[in-house]
Structure formats: structure tokens, C-alpha cells
Length: 342
Image 1 (spheres, rainbow, N blue to C red):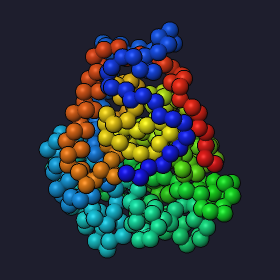
Image 2 (image 1 turned 135 degrees about the vertical axis):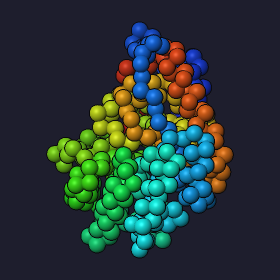
Image 3 (image 1 turned 180 degrees about the vertical axis):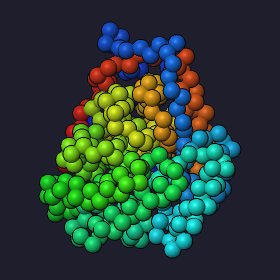
């Protein structure tokens, strides 16, 4: 499986709920989640980019049968094509299907080749060609309208990689300029736009998110997609501390396992994340959106991983709420700060 090595060496895997790992060290600095404390139950979904070999109707039926409460719907040609002439009618039928199954939805925009059959995730918001940037803006505005028609709780997006030969400051200016009309559409629709820090992109870290937020004047409808694996991959804080630090801006959550310094989405248990502290932190924020399993490169076995993932997350959630979980308030000291890619 292809992957990207980001930086520091991987840490030892952590078994959910097990002691002896880095999250258990330094008890004098730890905060405990009380076993009697009331927390908000989390609502788990599964991303359709991890079920790409299924028809959308079959994928939704599978998730409902497995007990998921929602779906991260990637707008793509094989499911809900955002460029199709019958998008409005298909969206209306999909809304009825979601309602019948009792599934909530987040609209995601990470389709690899939906705009360009030769460039993965191209064109982006950072492309040198203004017409190409406008195509990505149009896709995101379509996503906002689709989300409004579906009653989705957020629209996910990301910045893109800085094009070769582009000065970082130019990339940041383009990002702010291109997102402005999308945010206007989001505000008009009442749908949060949740941008995701993505390893290797110009907006790669939580610090980068705050740079964008400040540059745009802290718009109300700009929020954050927090990917738990990405926190493990390159943030200086532990994933649980990332949740706490980002809590006011979280509008969407993606979750999977991952190793330090390697951007590779892994099934739960195959990476290094200790999940009970993460889920305890997320529940404590009162977050009510979807927490969506993100395993796009395991789509060939999507039904299998969908079946395994929900029980894993529920067990980790139960561990977090039934027993005290010690979490260092300042992150795992063994995590090496990586900083921004800008």
C-alpha cells in the first residue's frame, strides 16, 4: 500500500483501554475523565469513499443495517455525481432514502478524479489558472447546495497542494480568495464549511487552520474537519489534546488509525492511536455531528471493514466513559512537533 512518510519515527501501538502506553505516563500532569460524568454519546458514520465498489443505495442499506447513524457522502461519479444533469432530482431521492433509513449525512468533497481524469484532486483552489480554480469553487458551491438539499450538518473540503513554482504566500492568498465565495454560499445556505488540515497540503495543521481563519476575519461559517489520524501523524499534541484545542471550531470529524510520521489511513488496531482518550475528549466537547470512519484505500473490502469498525469504536467509547482515562493535558511528550508545510 502506498503511503507518505511525514517525519518522526512511529511510536509503539496502543491497545484501546490498555495501560502502560505514553498516554498513561506522567500521572501528576494527567486529567481524569470521571466514570460518573455525563458525556454526549457520539454518532458514528462511514465514508462512501470506503465503499466505492457498492451502489450508493446498497452502501446506505449496509450502514443502516450495521447500526451506523450516518454517512460521509463523497460526491463522485459512482455515487452522487455533482456534475450530472439530474443532480437535483437524484439529491431529492437520496434525501428520501436517508430519511427512511434514519441516516444523517455530511457532504465530503475529496473525490480523486471528479473534475480531472488525469490529475488526482485537480484542479485545486490553489491552481495557477484562474479558470481551473473557478472549477473547484463551482464544485464546492454545488456541494453546499447539495448539503442544504440533504439536510447535511456540514460540507467538508481541503486546501490542496501548493503547485510547483508557486510561492507559499501566493498559495495562501489564492486559498483565501477562492474560499470567499464558497463561504458566502455556505452562509446563505446555513451550512458550515469544514476545511480539513491535510498532510502535504498548504493547510496541513491546526495552526494553518487558525492562520486561514484569521486571514478571513474569523467567518462564522468556516469550521474545521478534524481527522484524528492526521493528528497522530504530524501534530505536536496528542490526538486527544488536538480535540480539546480544536473543540470550538470542530464541525466534522473523520477517524481511522495511523502511525506517527506516516500518512497512511489504517483500520482500527493497525496503528498507534489510543482511542478511548480521544473519544472521551470528543464526547466531552458536546460535539453532535458525525464521526466518520475514513478508509478509502480499503474500499475493496469496504463491507468487511465497515462491519468491524463500529463495534471497535463503541467498545472504545464504552471504555472511555466507564473508567477513568488519564490524558496528559499538553500532549504526548514523545510526539515530535512538525509545524506547517507553508
